[in-house]
Image 1 (cartoon, rainbow, N blue to C red):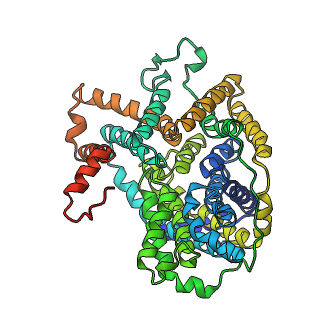
Image 2 (cartoon, rainbow, N blue to C red):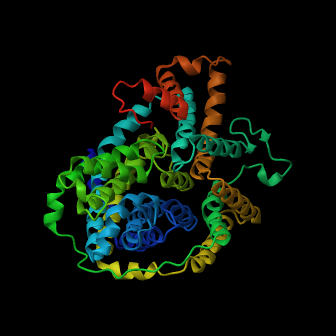
Amino acid sequence: MTGLGNFGAALLELSTFTTLFHVTWATLLGIFVGSLPGLTATMGVALLTTLTYTMDRDAAILVLLCMYVGAIYGGSRSAILLNIPGTPASAATALDGYPLAQQGRAGYAMGLATAGSALGTLIGILLLVMLAPPLAEAALKFGSYEFFWLALFGIVISGQLTGGASPLKGYIAGILGLMVAMVGSDGIHSYIRLTGGFDQLNGGIGLIPAMVGAFGFAEVLSVMWQKVPELATNAAKGSSLPRLLDIWRYRITIVRSGIIGTMVGIIPGVGEDIGAWASYAAARRKSPERDQFGKGSTEGLTAAETGNSAVVPGALIPALTLAIPGSAPAAVLIAALFIHGIRPGPMIMIEQPTFIYSVAAMLVFATLAIGIFGVALTPLFIQVLKIPRAWLMPVVFTLCVIGPYALSQRLFDVWVMVAFGFIGFLMRQMKYPVAPLVLGIILGDLLDKSLRRGLILSDGDISAFFTRPISAGFAIIIAVSVLLSIAPVRRSLAARNPFANGKQP
């Protein structure tokens, strides 16, 4: 069956009442999470993962994808109404969305953002179906040596998940995750390592307790540590239905932003916020109305929302085919896939040949949901923004405790969650990104096994990791990535660039 046929079959298979029920509640929850400043898509996916243990595989992945799509879209609500992005992905949306709201066009701005988000996601889905299968087929040529470099590449690229902090902090967080992954029995000879005499650690540190603590409980501690002022909302004015004429007028901007967002998503570790800014910058550069950008430009708002939403399917392309996430929420989603018996990576087209098409079909349902809810429930979203965060945190903490305990019925995992909550809180206070920590835990086992298997196959000769073509290519890319993350090196290269305009990066 062709790729298009597989995609159509997946759509038909998912067209059930149960699917629609899961799409409805999960997307709504995602939109609410994205709308509330401080509750990110990453934390939403992490917490929802704890509620999917008893669900079947497809239903669990469906609700997590709906949470992901809904949260990225939901950030535009508070960005437009309050000038406070609900998620980092909506920072560019606030530039023109909030001025439109001040002009009495908040409802229309949210409708236009809804149209841009839906169309951007659909463009990304199309590229996901086209690009993911051949990428997975190419990755089948990987062996132990290539998998070692692939895992290391994931850690190195985590320096791009720093949200403006030094890449070095991203590397440190990723290496800390690798160290956590080394605790317990090794994957080849079952030798006990780094347990400190605690028998409960013989099986390693659970991914779910660590992930929920680092994202969920750390957020609770952050709210307790620093009181956030309550937000006052503006009333949405005007129609929430975008005019088809506006959408058609910006058709080139929408297509361009969708492609840019998807390509940004494919680059591991970059994320939705970069997709939004890159699309916004491209639209401003090409627009005859560039002087209106930042003052209430409907084209700028459309470009930003199309770009950040297109990153979601784009980020899933490397996540599914290489097990390397294109964004922080995708890193958490990879962990959820492993929990539900799906092994993302080059073998996915062999072990689960139709799964990529099922994911694309799930994203279509999530896209339809944000389109419907975004237009129909705008007044309700405004009321949700008034919920004090202090009321939400007890619910978040309860989920943090129940999730890890429900998985293993071990109180020890609850303490692991608490420990990683404090670790995540301290990392936030010191401006260290948390996503690379989780990524390091995920990739640690792959890196460890691949390194030792490769050394066994080469009889201890480390040169084998550098002489195979794909391995050598990865090694060069990693070296260049590390060098370019060093500020003096970047400045030196910029100074030598004959086309540079004299400004330092």
